[in-house]
Image (cartoon, rainbow, N blue to C red; front, top):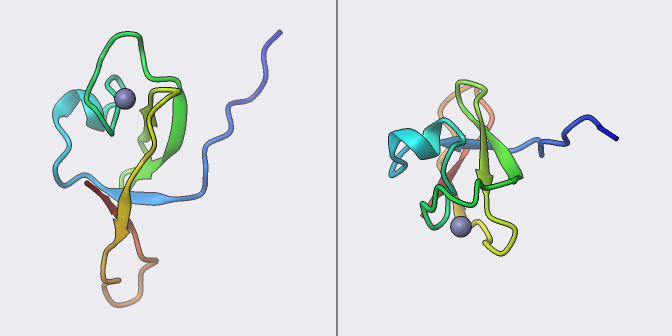
Length: 76
Ligand SMILES: [Zn+2]
């Protein structure tokens, strides 16, 4: 059984994320690569989905919106 993955409509800036995190291969919260993070929390500005472990939560702060664009969030 497969279903379309639900990715929240939330945008993050990649600041503070390493390469694996930016590619959705590591948890955006704790940085753990295995077990693979499964829970999508949003997308980076370039559209790449980012994920966290099932037991991790994302702490994000809003970034000041630049003119004419939606406000992304910054992970910390
Ligand atoms: Zn994690």
